[in-house]
Image (cartoon, rainbow, N blue to C red):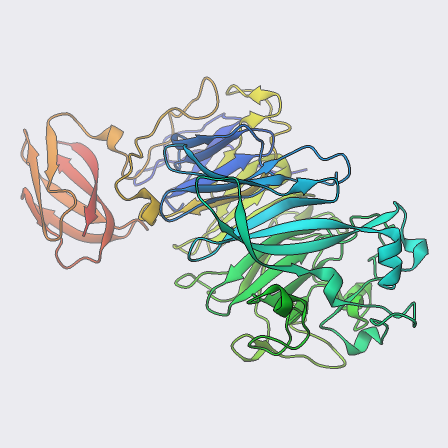
Length: 542
């Protein structure tokens, strides 16, 4: 059973009361990160960007439900997956389509990768420069799988899925793309079943390859790997992927060509498309047993971006199907140099445990999402968590206190009203963006209504939302690089300047002119006190 707090706090003020909300915003504490959250409900064609009170600040519409992931690009475009029915490839997360919309919901590009023998699924990733990584599967026939050394007893559906990563160069204004390279797991297999095949060998001697007959106690269905995520590290030029069914993650180099992707020796690290690193289940390469597992049906492993706490480390949502509770974990792969990972012939790849773990502090079983889900480190040190199978987002501070909560009201039964009990409101991933994210510069983010019907926001105020500004007040110029003038009908008692982490960076009294020339470029919030009124206004320092 999952415990969820139904409280809503007012930012920069004292606690005023309790909210009985069942969907939308539940909690907005003053220690939450004041950003914008992007998500695409699994059973909806809509993609939402909401503020910390659950009000829609932007929305995109498609004719397809998502095949899991969506991305907001720095130029304001939305890159998303779309789901196409596929009679032969039917596991969860199957999509087949990629779409690119601009900020105004104009479709700029779409690409279909779907047939009875192949399909895009789960994740994509927007690369620097405009190309897109795409996760996909192709079908190996039973005969093809046997020629790769698969034990016939482990082929229950007459086929085996080969996982792919493809780099696409979109051709805008069309439905086509150039394929820069493709990587296939079938090129990086080892097996100790059939000594007549070229990939026969000792599994324990080849951690860079995947044992084709290791199924992690699964039953031999075609979908034996179920990759559910791909993420990219530009500094290392490496890709991390996640296999839900093998309880393991893998890192490979981003190849320059399909030939390099299939090679065992090419590239910067001399391993071609082989694994540079793997973690989570050492039994899969004969370096342990089930008790050595550190991952359980995980989602969204990714490098924490530069500038954040624990930057460069890997963060992962561990669903925990085998242990019946979920956790958020951070770990650092041991390296001998950047991008080169330590390997021990006895113990395999480290570390033996995570550096940081979040579980429910009262009872681990209170927090459990069997599918989907994500976690994200935020600029103020908080962590945003998406409990995917409940459509429940919550943010924890560094002391593991819940400071923000939201429940997705867009379900496969339609939009819920406040007071309804949420169900079938799955969300694959939720990401929160800073208000100074480049996509928002010059864009109208005036809050609209919440998603839910009959909303109740009586106990949720936002730091820096213009709707709380009184009439006849003008702050100019905005943007500005130095001075801010405040034109108001009443005397100004005091002006407080806050950064977007809520820290007070300037305080002045009895003045209508504020000097911000010493502040760094970014968005700030003015709290203008006049005649017992507090007025909030956002400004952009150039």
